Image 1 (cartoon, helix red, strand yellow):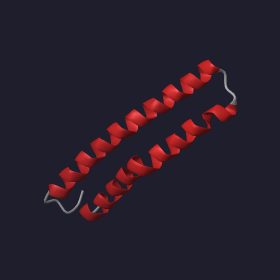
Image 2 (tube, rainbow, N blue to C red):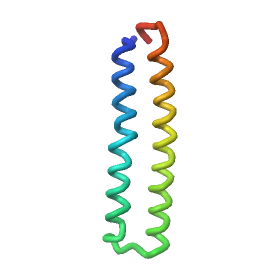
Image 3 (cartoon, rainbow, N blue to C red):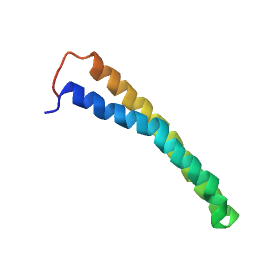
Length: 79
């Protein structure tokens, strides 16, 4: 079992990571991608993949925020 407070802390860490760390890292990858000298089609594919990761990360963060709020509102003290 895990306490409500510990669960909320863990979810908050995930939210912060999804909100700040991952976009920062993806931005760095996008900025440095031209340095690798990839053919244009491979660079475009890499950019498309990074964009999909960005979209999925945003979706995941929103889902995690909904879970966080639901747990915050519950009366359960352990899960």
